[in-house]
Amino acid sequence: MADALHYLELTELAARLKARDISALDVTRAQLDRIDALDRELGSYVHVMADTAIAEAKAADAEIAHGRYRGPLHGVPIALKDLFWTKGIPTAAGTILHRDFRPGEDATVVRRLKDAGAVVLGKVQLSEGAYSDHHPLVTPPKNPWNAAYWPGISSSGPAVATAAGLCFGSLGSDTGGSIRWPSAANGLTGLKPSWGRVSRHGTFELAATLDHVGPIGRSAVDAGALLGVIAGHDPNDPTSLFDPVPDYLAAATQDVRGLRIGVDAAWNNDDVDVATQRALADAIDAFRALGVDIVNVRFPDVMQAIADWTPNCAVEAAVAHEATYPARKDEYGPILASVIEAGRTLSALDYQKILLRRLALRGRVAALFETIDLLLIPVHPFPPVTLAMIRTLGEQPDLIAKLQRYTCPFDMTGHPTITLPGGASADGLPIAFQLVAAHLDEAMLVRAGAAFQRTTSWHRRHPSLTSRRQH
Image (cartoon, rainbow, N blue to C red; front, side, top):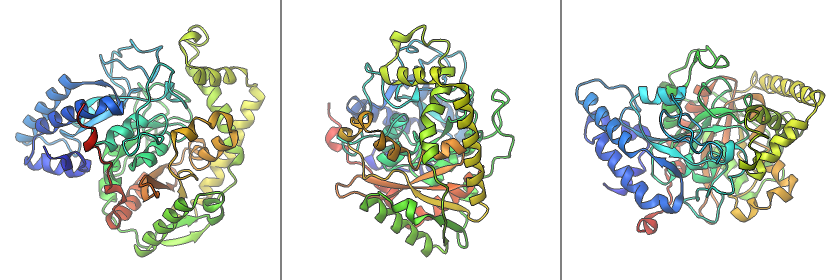
């Protein structure tokens, strides 16, 4: 099977499967062969589910042949971040602690993907407990563009697998930037939905009020196709919202003329590298050419929210791990253990102040979206980040704050964002930007993202992996 097929967008493959000019079985076998050839070096998969994937592909082919087409995920091979419960399959959440855990049921999002006819290729790697570093006994995935560069944090496994053509889309989670950083680092489109839009039932928890489940794909249309399947109320998750789920694929076809995109020039350019500024300027020009109105705005100050994110996350992580920490402390890596320790010692008064500041910021951001439809911002202020730079983060709190500047505020407020490839560094590494929308307006993100990608080709760039295929 030609390499180019592995880099089809999910929705492009779906059209070919529906037309039966290619079979789900052939595609799945090719994906499994590619994983076998490439992933020993990349390290994105924790557990490859070859037997069940083949069975699901055969079932999809039979149903499609008999006219029982389930929709755009039917027969499409995807991957799951290894914090989503998958019945009978090891689900470790990047920990040593849970390496023998085999759930008795699927997470709601996994069940919905299976009900849509998706072929689950396997579980992909993440940082320990979805926090900021891998357990010392776990080997992190490698960036397929250049192994010396950061692949992003917690959802790096899903992003590496998707970027390398080892699946056609994946499911990740975002608590402080963990869909957006890996999507940016790997040249992908990642959608962090509004908090509550997607059920978290059967998902290993890091910080309940900050955790967002969402898709990583090759385009905004692909992200919309995945989100349309997993979104919606779930009786097993009482925090999931009852609001109806729009037709995201229909939204992707809509014109964007007359939409208002807000830009805070000071926030977007202050201490932001030149290549990122250029990508933002090019994106603004592309949207102007599409008939969008660019509106100057002043975004609320987020420095306090960035400072608040870590203690907020720490308290919630301490609650999430209460059954096993400190009882099984020796099985934890030092980074996750340290944040849990911090959460266990924060005073109730200090935590309540954080919650009140979060509510105030949420209100200020909501007010901004009374005047604009979207906000355009960077993903982070650096050029593509090297692993050498990431290794210094623990010694540079200012660097951590810069990394989180454009991501964690929207986990604190719960607003949805989409990450879109929009440029390249001098070394050819991807550079991305974000669009942010009003609460529950993911359809606007898909609509604008799809329009941008109809007139640009950044999302169609792929890493060259031919030299890595023989092992």
